Image (tube, rainbow, N blue to C red):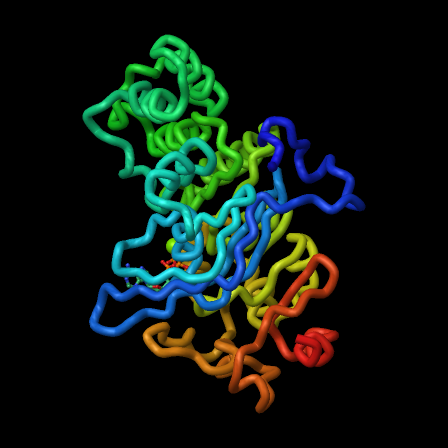
Length: 346
Ligand SMILES: Nc1ncnc2c1ncn2[C@@H]1O[C@H](COP(=O)(O)OP(=O)(O)OP(=O)(O)O)[C@@H](O)[C@H]1O
Ligand SMILES: [Mg+2]
């Protein structure tokens, strides 16, 4: 069994010479949407793990599959979607769990702050009622205790607890986003997934809220997956970074190393284009890259980045280019040292 999140020291304080059982271990995750006329191959063979208390930033340009991967973890994708692979969370494969079990995992063990969450609050209910609801639903506590916890949570996210009886429209955008964070933390989850939690806010408020969020999860030993198209945000707030391209995870490793010496040519282009915080242009492709990302309505043969890659070789254009591990880093590129040995052994 994994220890309760509250007993696990933050990643920075743990000894790194001791192997830690991952809280989340995702293997060969493949997601295909069937909602349109043709299938969309939105995630292909995605592998990553998250240690207890670790913060992982997921980067990649618009349409690369970040939300798809994040939402698949808690099975929050539309019904016409095929998801295969393994999502091991606290020793349980969530892809094999029934819906009753998934309902109890959501909020209580893992929670999500959605992309565009500001419109997710119910306009006709007070913020206090909305924070109290998951607590009453998932825990054996009375109304009074739940309300006291809601007040504490509001204080901890920087919204004065006297605002507990306010309606969402009475708060600023930044305050509403803080309320969403309080709701996500309400049941003391082990994992929090934050999908572009601050994109709609102005730059200064964005930076404040993201650093508050990472402080809160670190204090509580909660693991965090934070999605952003903004690599500079992720570099300054997360222990590790995972880079997605066209539905594949192309590189993962400690944030500083991925930024300073990216292994995959796409990660290099992304890091080279290092966007300034809040720059709306950074949602688009990194500057200087020719061409567009591939159409995900077609199955991709070879490396999805090959058509745009300055270092492309013939062998990049067919087959599957697997993620090759190098210490605590990994990249899916034929030029990574040890690629041939790893693929040969595999
Ligand atoms: N419900 C759906 N049905 C069909 N295709 C979808 C659906 N949701 C997403 N897609 C497609 O899947 C691909 C990945 O989308 P996803 O939303 O995961 O990207 P993203 O990396 O989160 O992008 P962004 O940065 O814009 O939020 C895109 O090509 C998108 O058009
Ligand atoms: Mg998204």
